[in-house]
Image 1 (cartoon, rainbow, N blue to C red):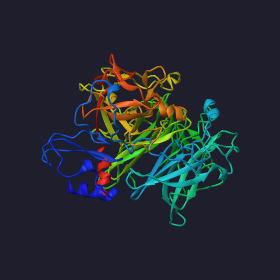
Image 2: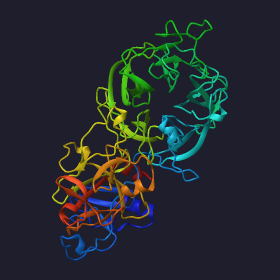
Image 3: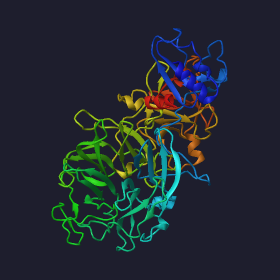
Image 4: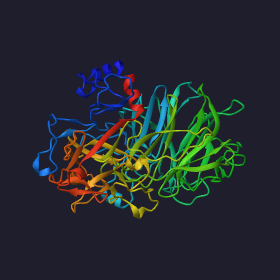
Length: 584
């Protein structure tokens, strides 16, 4: 405890009042402003009654408030907020425009994880036309998966001579390999774009750099032209490259490249990493259903409704050596769920144990995973459209841990607004009934989106995660400590939203406008019921209105029924964030 106490004091230059020694009890919440809420166990400090999770900006009145909201002026309350979580990149450019980026890829080099995304800048018109506008690739680095440092543009499509346009920096992946001629480690960025040299179809490219942060230089021609792969079902079959370097049972290095939309392709690379291996040495690159009689294999056998976004992965043992089956992670069906299949031999083209482990996100039609190991654990980076104004063409990277079952399978997982590093809150009524949203699985139908009218109330769901919330700084003014926005933990990007007709629902911020931000922002004030542990929520759009439970449904009222307009909030920060903070 002393270590944490000292760490907090050093981090902020003062000790928060709610963290002063001698106020702990059996189970006690401590507030670290803008960062943590930590649960301590019995045996630490005082055994007095627990203080409320909220901290008031002014002293609580000595006597309870009256039941009527009109008889007392509520005072501002500062609630613990989630300072981190998903999406993990929340930046603006020099013009003040929000930065979006999808199709995340991760490469771990030593003690640093590097995240690569395209830069999504589709306009509203382009979004309405389902058009991607991605001019370049960005890189971010992290040594703890908590804080990410922008490393800038690593490659611009203007510098790719064979690209049909300069706005199609589609999915990529980076790896490191030793150049066989120089013995020097180089970094290779595999990517895809529309190819003016190959009939305008999508092709696979590769660019090379001496650093994981670039700049990457394209080799001057496609690595795999879309016109040579067979079979073909569209002009965009040849997208989403993934690369994996392994050593087989004979000690021979194998360098695999896989890709594909609707059709899964796989080949081997030469040691130079920039050319396809000619398996039979006939001087031709041919296609078939296995690598015994072809150089590029196309085989969906055993895959589960394969769509796109492949990612090759293999687990490691305690020494860091690859072991066990190979995994192919990929997007399945439409809207895109996350699935995986396994094989004992990548060259066989036979996949088994196929299953979906994550349904579509609540804010994006596509998904693209990056599976990687970091400091002894396995993680998945993926994308959604949860940022204000986001969607399937303005995407954002998210991060969660993959938890393996003992048999090497994965259980179903949900998207998470808190992710690895955020704070999850529960909100209950004065009588202890949890506030939750209606239970639903994200739809596979495009017509169901965007979600704008999901009911919230009491008794709407028996699922624990439907009653978990992520409270963040108010979207309309992040500098006002009393303002909050409240997001569903398992529906990233869906916030409590006050509507003009007096109703309240979970809704996505699809336009990023100030009016939407205001509708999704509330002022936290002392509980109208006079309970010092309670809090009430005024709407920013109409300060005379409060969130209130009426017949089991969350709605807006004048707060006259003080008990129904008062709530209790408790919070707990992810253990990952706590451990990272303590290591600093």
